[in-house]
Picture (cartoon, rainbow, N blue to C red):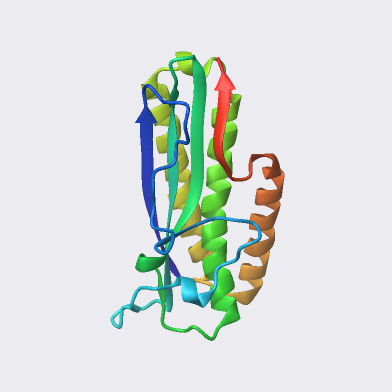
Length: 190
């Protein structure tokens, strides 16, 4: 019913011709995938017994970008769920699990928006880093605001009718950006 969003990004100035992704412990984090929905076993943290919430989902957008020596612009953008910081006090509610999945889906939606923005950059290796940072800040602000609005309008998933409306909105948003689903690495020549 509550979410935690982390923001992680990196600039790679001289990127080698290898994957952009750093090594992560697969048991601690989960990359968003259309065919892999959250399960209660993904919520590994101990519930906060003093919290007013029934569940907490920790998500973030991991992004890396930069220009390689050959002049190609490379980027990687992932929506990530942090298992060891996510918890639930109620692992029997499919409605609560769907609410938490929608938080993760919102993070993927913003990741797709970022992939699209990177894709649409004109002469990306000529774009000043301050411009890209501003673009990232704007997107992260939008992500945070969207999570807050989602919880506000659904009352953290308790308003069933509003939850159904938001589920539809999120599904349509993801569909609109289906061409920018998760990719491990994207390369554009300048």
